[in-house]
Each structure stands twice: as C-alpha cells, then as structure tokens.
Length: 273
Length: 91
Image (cartoon, rainbow over all chains, first blue to last red; front, side, top):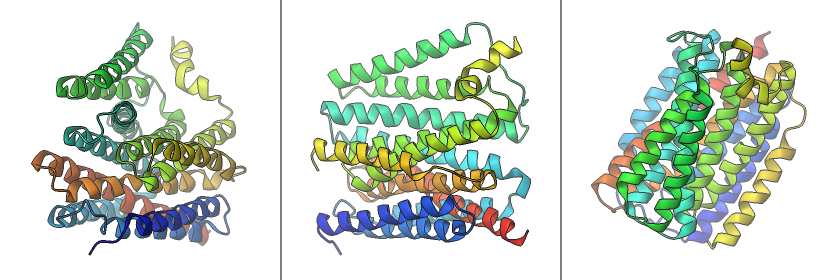
C-alpha cells in the first residue's frame, strides 16, 4: 500500500509533536514516565508511516533488520546492571551515530543528491555520525573499564585533531566539486572515525556523563544532516530538536558538576600535564 | 521539499529544542539523556527507506546495517529509560 507524501508528512508532524511533549515530560519527575511513553509512541508513528513510503518496494531486509536490532536492543536494555546505565546509553548512542553514517553512505552511493546542499549534508552526516560512533564507543570502553579511565593522550594531539578536522572539511569540499569519488568518501569516514577516538581519549572517566550528553547532541545533528540528504522532514525536525536540547542538557549537567564545557573538552590535558 | 523549507524547519526546531529544556532536577539528567538518545534513533526512518529501496545491493546492505543499528538504539533506548524511571518510582 502507498499513500501520498502529504499524509506521510502530516504523520511526521504528529510524531514531532509527540517528541516535543515527550522531552518536556522527561524534564519533570511527575511526568517523566509518560514523557518516555509519548516519545516512544512518536517513534512508532514515524516508523509505521515510513513503511508506506513510495521508495520502499521490498520488506524482507527491513523485517530482518528490525528483528535483529530489536532483539539485541531489548536484551541490552533488560540485562544491563543498574550501575552500568551510563555506558549502555553511550553504546546505544554510538549505534545511533553509526546508523546516521550508514544512511548517509547509502544515499551517497545511490548518487541521489549530487548537488551542493546534498553533498554538504552527506559530508556533515558522515563526519558527525562517525565521530559519534567511535567517540561513544571510547566513552563506553572507559566506563566499562575495558580501557583505563584516566585521561590519555600524546604530545601534539590537539594538532593532530585539528589536522583531521581540516582534512575532513577539505574532503567534503572536494566531494562537492567531484561528487562521484568513493575513495575521498571513505577517507573522510576514516578521518572522522579517528577524530572521534582522539577527542574522547583525553577525557577522564568522571567527566564521561557530560561527554555522553554531548555525543547524544551530536547524534541528533547527524540525524538532522541525514534528513537534509534524504529530504525527510521527520529526520530534520527531530534530529535538530535532540541536537539543541542535548546541548542544553550538556550545559546543565556541566553546571551541576561545577565544570565548564570547555574545561571538560579541552582543559583536562593541561591539568594532567 | 525545497531547501529553504528544510532550512526553516531546521532553524525553528533548534530554537524549540533550546527553549524546551530549562530546569531539570539532577536525578532526571540520565533518564532525559537516555530518552533523547532514543529519540535520536529517528534516523531509523531514513534507514528503512534505504533498506527497502530498489537502488541496488550495496544500498540495501548499508540500509540493513543502518536499520539494525538504529533499531538497537530505539528499542534499547526507550526500554532502558523506562527501567531507569521505574527505579526512581519505587524509592
């Protein structure tokens, strides 16, 4: 069955309203449970209506993916110890960033939007998505004590980070001029993945919740960028909503811990050295 | 949808997101982070379209990976948020 784009966009509007009410609800103890339910309902509406999208012609892959992902997600959520919640959120967030990266990659190789806006949005989704993916995994590994919680780094790390970021931006610029260059696309992806690792490694375990909140904001922005690539209003609105509210939450969490965001992100190496 | 309409949605949603969160009691920091993390799994919508399209094997494979990852994010995210909130209730 297929329905017109208008009806799909109206359903996306309903789900966006549910997300807004959900986030609002989650900020107050009394309404938090209901807020989470409303947000989950919003996600249900958005996903079900998407199945009626005219670009979807086959359902086997979708069903397989949803079953595999659903089972893994449910097991992770059920089995995790209460004390291990923050690292689970980090891990889930990394998957979200990875998903946005994969969506942007699919759209890139489909060659759907080789115009400037499309390529810049693809580049942003790849860059931010890959940083979120690897950065969240490092945050997870630190909290799970797979690697030491202490700040780690090497001399000249900031310079390497700056070069990786500049290199990524140059790669996006190159793709705008030459959209069909997979090698540059993968170079961008690898540079962004390394950048994600290096950005989180020098941050200590105690500051990790703030970093996870920030990475959560990033994964929202990555989803929003993927929305620009696909011309999908649900992704644009909801992604930017999470991106902005996540950034505010990051600030609030910093204040509660008596830290400044710049201190968390850049000051630790100076303190350690 | 044209670019200007998309940009309008983007900018207005950013402002809405900033205004949405003002005061949050510290006990709700982690659940709110977890809940909005689940919402950022909205990228599942894009993943479904890529996985179900007829644009070729590579696109479907990338779409499948995206669907799996985003579904873990969404299902795990909402369920774990619910568990956290249930824990507060009992106190």
